[in-house]
Length: 129
Image 1 (cartoon, rainbow, N blue to C red):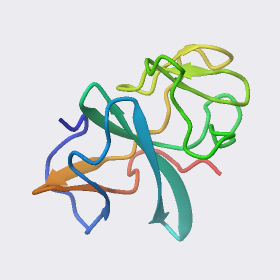
Image 2 (cartoon, rainbow, N blue to C red; image 1 turned 180 degrees about the vertical axis):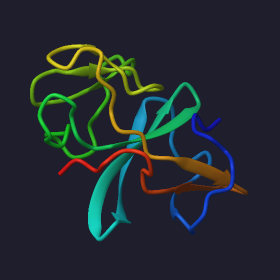
Image 3 (tube, rainbow, N blue to C red; image 1 turned 135 degrees about the vertical axis):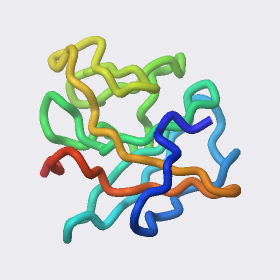
């Protein structure tokens, strides 16, 4: 189940995964070309719910993984930033602990069509650099 709006979007989007590719508690990094810039994002599977976020911590605009593609806590319950320990709900992107408490990771819109998961550039928020 994809935790994003399923309405048809303008543009083609980018196929970033196939349905069933990610198991619970796993992530997959991908890149999107958005408004002339490359955006690094992560696809997240938490209990069968697929979400995607820009790979930038709300506290300091750094990528969240020190070890490539390692975003979940050991118990696979939360996403965590390796820099300062900001901890996020995987299905909403809300920071529930740490220096950015109450802030949200930037959402990346998704669409599932057939067996493909497509990602689209965030439309409503300015890209963080």
